[in-house]
Image 1 (cartoon, rainbow over the protein chains, first blue to last red):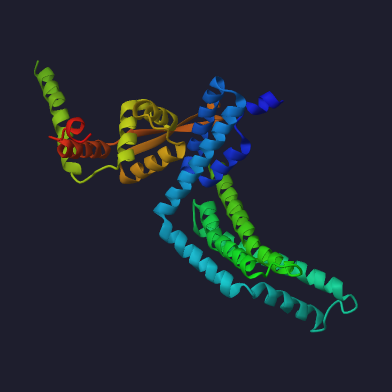
Image 2 (image 1 turned 180 degrees about the vertical axis):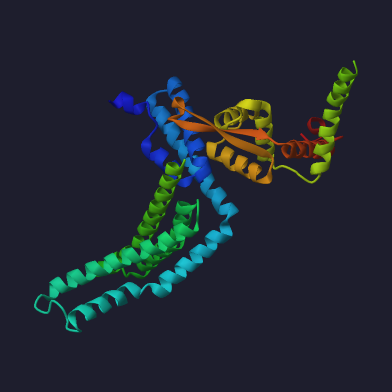
Length: 219
Length: 134
């Protein structure tokens, strides 16, 4: 079973190449890498061949990403700016929407009056879900606009968020916010800055997968 | 006899006419260093120019280990400029059921190679690298 598995190129690497390469080149690039892997494995050990395949895939993805950023940097930059503005000015929308729903359903009466902790738990969970959905929708919109470069655009969308996260982490560590008894500040930053990153990548992957599926079905 | 003569005349004319097109079409088309290498590799490989063979040709002749992504990014750029054309071949089992994308150099591509090489020749004419600059 393991021998049979090792004769095939790593699936995860092939999947990543499929995701990051342009539509019209995805098939030929994946085919070329597969063909070279078959040639390489006949001359080397399977472990070496798999390592070589991974290296080639990473290099290929890096080249495709750099080329996409080089050729359409202005459109990607516009998408990043618009999405960041949406995140900044629309960041409070999920809370407003959720409290609006609560107000409408319960007629302004504080729900779960008898069980305050339960209320807080469900409120936080629903707010987190609303935030995740909001980030997913922004990523979805960005991926829809960036035709053929969905994952590269959504990954680029994470750059400001990630750099903000790193800067804030360094700052909080520097001024001592992350001190005993105040760990919640760090977790607050973690949730608020990591969740958009994950949701952007996820939305880019979903849009890309749907489009590739449609293209294959059409072919 | 007359027909044979006409055919010969046309055959003689074709290379001259082709060179004329090559010269007139684009005098200002120049290639980057890697574009030049990739285009020459495609030209050398002729009918069998696709990602794997182009990569191997560059590796063998230019002693440069380049990734498949770099080859395709350059070929895509060359195709956008009209220097190469491409078409898909049939899917094969050794490629996991995926098809090859074959590339051909267009007349504009040949003109670009010609211009670049002429410029290089003119720039290097009279320079004795080994004697004077090492």
